[in-house]
Length: 114
Length: 113
Image 1 (spheres, rainbow over the protein chains, first blue to last red):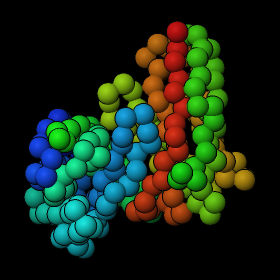
Image 2 (cartoon, rainbow over the protein chains, first blue to last red; image 1 turned 30 degrees about the horizontal axis):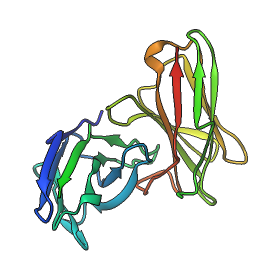
Image 3 (cartoon, rainbow over the protein chains, first blue to last red; image 1 turned 180 degrees about the horizontal axis):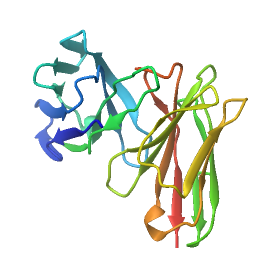
């Protein structure tokens, strides 16, 4: 089955700096890659996603890049703010006809220091 | 608010007991997913239903079972509970069963004492 690895497990950056979180996946059939943000005690919320026919997607300060050949994708947050502090999860899904089996990475705890 | 409703929010029970967690998906969503999140751990996929039928299965224990009813709400049944079953259980929903954004509920915090 699919296996998703995520690095680093913890990341501390100064406010205003950029943060990069990287994920690798194992199943070449995976074709949908979302990123979720989970604040302490809250539900995971989708912040950006990318499909395998796209190499990069950007939404304001957040961007995601995908390298299908290398089977890795990354989340880039620019001009970080204290409210970006949270745990970020990447996920991969093959979405084959029998159903969608999202596999999440172990998460990255991002701390933005003021 | 994601529109996904989970009840109860908190559940405290003893080892060996059985509990039922309930989830109502967003209006219009036909697919429901269950995830388990242990303390400081990631999201472990348990099971997915689409329009009443099981569509995908993850690392769900045999002591756990789930179903989706005709009104699309879903229940996750956990039996013969063990201390290690203590976790936050999330339900999520999506419109279609494949490659679709998930919307998560607030979760049910289960504590097995």
